[in-house]
Image (tube, one colour):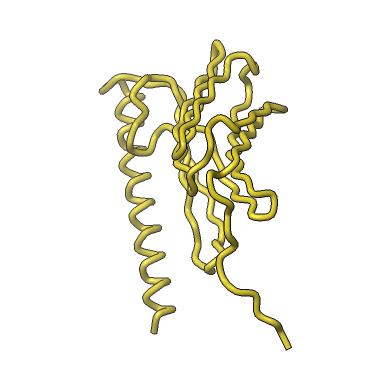
Length: 168
């Protein structure tokens, strides 16, 4: 039955994630004991949401997971991408607390957004792939209470998927 295969795959993916986490923690503790180079604050986490098709979506964040960010001390912020069909826009929302607005750098292309922010004791960096092509010149960014919100207009109007079905 497809349901059993789906859950089996989901549980196998979760088991792999926990094995990766265990491997990363081993690396961390060997570094903390002086067996390697200390790279700075360690952050790792994930969020699980249910997608429109009913399947779970797992998003990872942090600076411990592979690929390791190439410069020491940077952490990857939690980022969410929201496609708003009604407003015909794409929003990239990033949690980057503890930095000043003038220390945030945002760069957008048609297919991705790069974010870099740093203060004296906090450094963030990430690259976000966008689900649709956007017009980078339409980008608008706001930063308030540690939340960076970048709004972009898509090149083509976003079409809602599916057909509306009348419920009797």
